[in-house]
Length: 173
Image 1 (cartoon, rainbow, N blue to C red):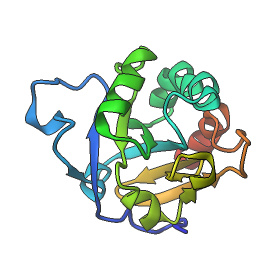
Image 2 (cartoon, rainbow, N blue to C red):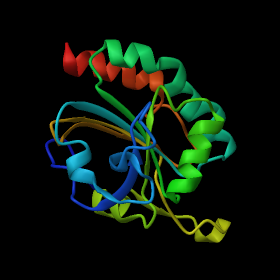
Image 3 (cartoon, rainbow, N blue to C red):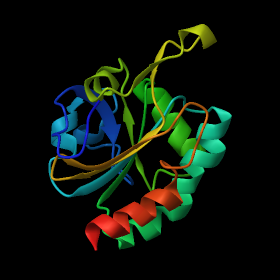
């Protein structure tokens, strides 16, 4: 599993930054980008959810970050990102349906390559969901992991927005 000080792996992901110009080819969700390049500069907070549109992921995890987005940016976070093992079209539709596109970006780890490279992959095949990512939150500065919080199955505490806001304030103070 990735840990503090590790560099972000270089694998293809599909991503769109918050408030991205959808006509810009750099934000085209049908084109893969480098995960390492995405977070190479600045401070980024990435939170991972096992499934877009699932009840806990939508009503608690994602919504918490939507509510805390401004506070996180004021605390020094340049980029706020939601990651899931879904295709880019699902991620785009999910974030838009939550009216969150102006507050956070999304990352579609469509083939779970980034989740595997970080050691955050999770087998949910018995539930008909295949490989997903664990519920987590990660603070990254200039491509290096500063903080990684991984939830035990079924829980939402250490990767929740209020907890991570405290972590951000502590790391960036």
